[in-house]
Amino acid sequence: MNSIFKINKMKNILKVAMAILFSLFFINKNNAQYSEFGVGLGFSTYWGDLNGPSFGTNLTKNSGLALQLNGRKLFSKNLGIRASFSFGNVKGNDANSTIDWQQIRNLSFKSSLVELAVMGEFYIFGFDTEPGSSIFSPYFTAGLAAFRFDPKAVYRGNEYRLQPLGTEGQGMPGFRDKYSLYNLSIPFGGGAKIILSETMNIGIEMIIRRSFTDYLDDISTNYVNYDDLNAGNGTLAANLGNRMNEFLGQAEPVQLPTGTQRGGAKVKDYYFFSMVSFNFMLTDSKGKKRFGRSKVNCPSF
Image (cartoon, rainbow, N blue to C red; front, side, top):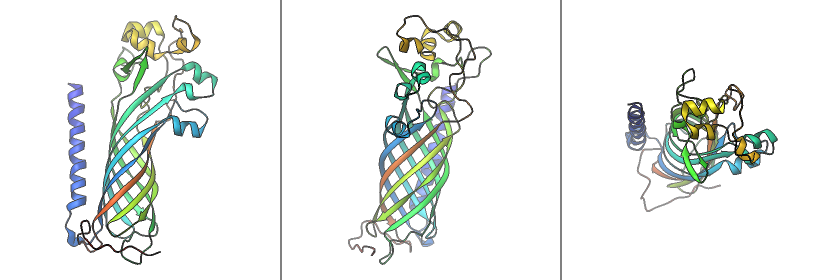
């Protein structure tokens, strides 16, 4: 019943997001506002308990390919609203760190991300595709997003979903419930558009998401003693909850007392999308159709 409720909840969020997207595209053109549709390609990056001390290593090793669809409506030259649907992959691994205790901890994960977001945009110098306008338009953005994640780990050649296992004792008597795979985040960041013509522009942006979960990587609080976790949630949960023995090259599990720190619960996990998007203008500032017109006038420098 729980999983059915979560699926229905995500479907409702999808319906709302699609309604927003359609409203952005087909709102009354008499309002005289720019509208556009865009397709983005880039990277999604994880930022959390599995980060090492090197910023560059975290950026390259924790990232995966990402795709995005978005729709925008500008209500003035400076203010607009945007809805987007994004799909990406993120990952993290203690083996990428140079810190001894992280390497010994030996935890890792990977996850897909599906996100729906609505954000406001502020164009610092305004946005205008009319002939004679600037071709460069930087902006700030912030809003609200709903996303789904599903952390997994590879163990002895097989891939396992971590949330159902309860690797930190979730679901056992005296422990918290298993965390939800559906959550919210606050996107914020910025970017810039390069206007190529009246009908097309290229966007470059990096938008950080501060999530409301610390389990994007399945790591948050403390270890549960191996034998206790084995008895409560099963051998697979115990083996994936504490993987120190694999790093140390021993068959026997490392017996840590329940309550030994495993992650940092005080700081929530982050993820972000770095995107290059190709955006097609549907209507101009007077609400007239743009896309599909044969005549193209380019803005001047």
